[in-house]
Length: 116
Image 1 (cartoon, helix red, strand yellow):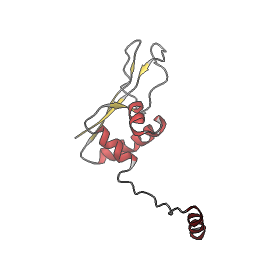
Image 2 (image 1 turned 30 degrees about the horizontal axis):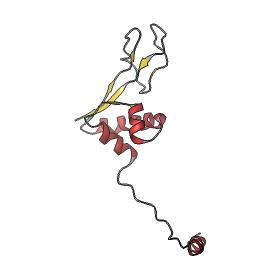
Image 3 (image 1 turned 135 degrees about the vertical axis):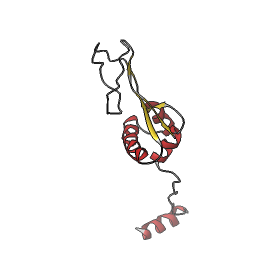
């Protein structure tokens, strides 16, 4: 593979590319953004440039690791916009599909933050 890259680089007068080392992982970046800020998963996905589904996956892992340290992962629960039902006992971080009281699908997303 190296020989091919050298031949290709000579033909095109290019240098072989070297991967750039990342300073922070995605989860570390999300943790630093949430430190002192309260944001939804949608806002985090826009900020990070990743999908909302990936943000939820990362948040689950962050929740597990933060609980072992001295900080706390705070989840402000989702709220139904129609009847104001609050999803307090929900363990999943994702936004619920329907309200159990009024069956409305208009639900405000849960918010996340990290407190010291």
